[in-house]
Amino acid sequence: MLYKPRTVSPEIFVLNSLNKRLELSANEKQYLVNLQKGFEGEKMFDSFTENLIENGYIIHDLLLQTNNNIFQIDSTIITLEEIHLFEIKNYEGDYYYQNDRIYTMNHKEISNPLNQIRRNETLFQQILQKHGLENKTITSSVVFINPEFTLYQAPLTLPFIFPTQIQRYLKRINHHSQKTNKSQKQLAEKLTSLHINKSPFSKLPPYEYKELQKGIFCEVCNSFEVAEAGTNVLCKECGHEEAFEKVVLRNVEELKILFPNEKITTPLLYDWCRIIASKKRIRKILEKHYKLIGNNRWSYFE
Image (tube, rainbow, N blue to C red):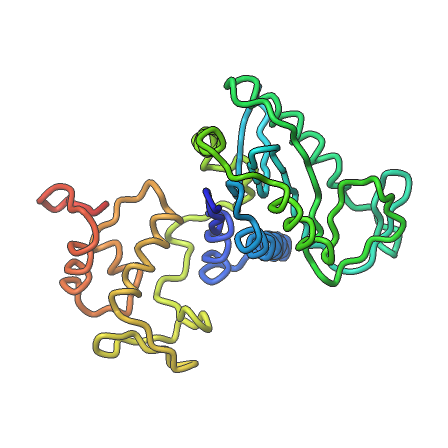
């Protein structure tokens, strides 16, 4: 049973937007690629859990803090019998395991996720104790989600779940789990309430409003060559049409995430979108979907 779904992180959203409106450095672009690949792997895992787990509460993307230590758990499954913590890796290619370390076939060492899940499990146990939560058996695993991944020489005793094992592993959890009760739901509620919304690990480059390219980009091909076309906005590059109202709302949300401290006003959105001829048309949509604060020249929407 899905309790907390996974959503695109603000960091990915902002970097995607900046990548269209500002020239990112090569390192920043690679960082975005890595974030997106990780998110894609997590969504692949979600498709398994949501289809195979019935007798348990599923919580995705928990960011928790205890004793000044912040840690993230990609996926958590709470059953009547135990709590399963999963670290998901979307590695691709051939690797080998040697002396508690993981290497590429070119002998380049990569971070061993075992160290991460051991730390996470310790800190998670502290969370349970600190808040007087139900003391359950905790099982931590690393899930290698990519079907193009191979790890040679890995000892059988390691808590690694390989691509061909994922479905069987989750089916086994569900099969051996009894129907959840009120206690498991309360635990899921408490853990979700402790979730930290803003990640301190974010690595966003500095940016200002004046630096960003203004205009509306096509939601399909990302081209800024778009124009009003009656009740739609038409992309001149790929021909995609998007409802005018949807376009305005999409750009409002983009502004709110890029500039969370900026008040949403009609003039601001008019300047941001550029191609929209009528401020009155923008204001009508804002009044329909947002609450107007104030009634003078300094009024804004939220």
